[in-house]
Length: 70
Image (tube, rainbow, N blue to C red; front, side, top):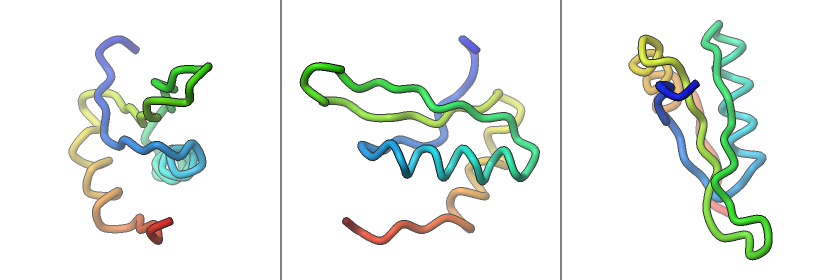
């Protein structure tokens, strides 16, 4: 997993989970990495995929996933 690439970042865990679930549904293995400080809740969540899936994942994220501004 060390070589996996970040394709999405957000401060909201539920958005990261939605993106991961959509990618997995498209047969792209994906994981959510919590880069947030536990005590202060500063940081973000990253969705990562294997290097050979980056381009397809980015296309799906850009074309098929939209979040309303919260």
